[in-house]
Length: 344
Image (cartoon, rainbow, N blue to C red):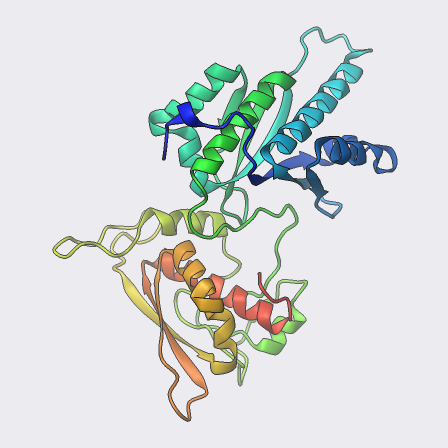
């Protein structure tokens, strides 16, 4: 990471940024206001785009997009609104100490290292210079590659803190693909080890998890083998896959894999995918297959099309965790194509 903060912008940069916040229903209600008046005022006065995720789940994602100045103005208005709510709640309260304003940012895990800094130096510097408390969650949010970053303090301390976090995010863009956190549980077909998933079954399972107790006959495409995974804990799997890239320099032994059998060597797994579906795996100019490689840490080779053969062979090489995650991501691409959801 570039730690040369002397030349860092003070918020006058004409750069468009997107910051995601995680809020509880009550907080979202406060931001929206009666008939949406509060959020409308925030949008107009800050110049930032403020979008709130749909859904009746207990948590919602608030996305703030715009030039850095607009983002800081929006954050300022949100922090002041929360302070107003705290003051109002204390009017008839016997509590004497006033709780701080608290915001939760959702940040790609690949950027959290830069935010923490070597030996925690960066986060310590942010805490000391702004007076805000900053906590980076140790675990990723469920089924995502993002972590929660909790900021608490006075509205002014929070704004200063957000400015510094924005500088870090601009200097250290996310690495690889990010699986964004979505509060409502993601749905998708289940794959049993050694089992198969049919395209028509996936169509039927767009909204529900489908358990295939028996391998189905004549699959449109199949993902088989010991690394197929029933509804994986993506977070843990991604952490495990990222801990160990399986390719070691010549002459060195392959490392063990914590959480999996330490004797598991790097291995290869093969699967076949119909030619008419291979495009959704590769993506434009290889963009999707490169995302899957980066996300999973696995090496993935797609065989050239051979005449008269309606399928292409795909070889995945890596640790069991790498292979499991690569297979899950490939299957997610296939199911989105079959169910007409397009790009995930």
